[in-house]
Amino acid sequence: MNQPEPRAEPRLPPRPVDRPPVDPAQAAAFGRPHGVAGAFDRLPTPGASNGAAIIAKPPTPESLTEAFGRPPGAEDVLLQRPADYTGEPAADAAEDPLWSKTADPWRDPGAAAVLGSPAVEPDNGDEDGSERPKGAMLSLPEVLFGRRVKPLALALLGVICLVIGAAGGVVGWWVSDALAGTATISEAEAGKERAPGSIADIARRVSPAVISIEVVSGRSGSIGSGVMIDPQGYALTNNHVISLASDDPQATITAVFTDGTRTQAKVVGTDPKTDLAVLKVSVANPTVIQIGRSSDLAPGDSVIAIGSPLGLQNTVTAGIVSALHRPISDPGGSGLPPVTTDTIQTDAPINHGNSGGALVDSTGALVGINWAIRSEGGSGQGGSIGIGFAIPVDDAIKVARVLISSGQVKHPEIGLNVASVSADTSEGARVNNVADGGPAARAGIAEGDVITKVGDRMVRDEAEFTVAVRAHNAGDVVAIQLVRQGRPLVVNVTLGSD
Image (tube, rainbow, N blue to C red; front, side, top):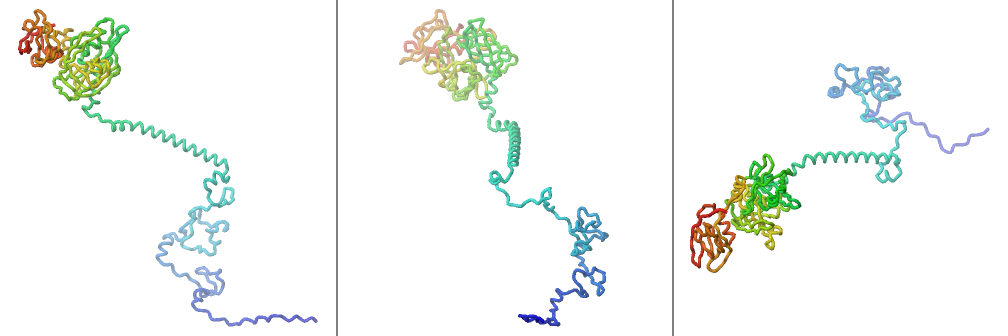
């Protein structure tokens, strides 16, 4: 009979029957409730008997009941309900574990508050039910060159960007165009200052009364300027501007206004000795210039010249009065007689074509008719050098009224010829010859006398003598001072008429 082999290690002795005492504090914290002898998963419900004792829950504090309890009269209604809650338990507790009263043994179905649905719906993956892969966000180089995005997606993204950019450009263009249309006036007004009395204001008011005159005679032509002085269509200009029409009945005269209107004109009368002429323009209700007084001018006063120099219509230049009572002689030419007249000297630029135009003062009133210039060499064929001359409006209007009424002007005549002279004993106009029976001969003026004063005006040369005589009227008795053989004399002359 085989005997069992002896064990190498001794068996454990039995455990003692008595147990060490339990700490009362630990027993109170971790022990079974009073009257419970079974496991914790079979806790009796409130009011139910487990055969040993009735476990009652302590009363809920009033503050908690008021804050989290059911409203009065709604003891059977849950405080919070899911959106799809019908009040009936789900047919399958496994399908509704959150709200099932039986599937969650740790939830008290009689609790005063229940859990609501989650605030954010969980991501359930793709539509096909598969879970989306999680990973790091891609950078721009990885998107464009990392081959981690489909080419079709990149192309679609580019098309979308182009469409958005084009739409933005169209909207921006439309907005800028609309704003530009409404802001132009405000910016133009902010950048301009045209106060009343400024050169721009005067030019705006006066220019419609200044016309450009075009004369055509056969194959010849000339151009100049004129000024509307009467509402009936009378215009004042220089005789040399329309001299071609005076000699040719077939010549045509055209008046051009600042607005481009062109109309025919005809000669009313001319005065070659003062180089003035009056035209009648075929126009209704023309803008007429305001007539000023040249006798009120003083050297240094501001003046503005308006006309058509070199055919450039509506040209405006500005300057001052350089001198007054400046006698100027023009030898004439091209069949025109010599002209000597008293003028206003100005440095306002005047060129060929300004002749007959307006010289206005700082109020826009007409004070002179632009007439001639002094240029390099003295021939007057060059451009302006700042020395221009205008016929005073006081003299021009007097001649114009006579031409309009009678068509011809009579000038005072003394009946002698003079030449400029300067000597140690005298300076004035030397008498070359005396017409028999004329005013000078009857007054006793002889050849060789030197006239130094006519009336109240000093005479220092031939031009001053001529303008001094024309300052009077035919029939006036004028005192003339002269020097005869070194002795001063005064004679009274009754002026005649030419």
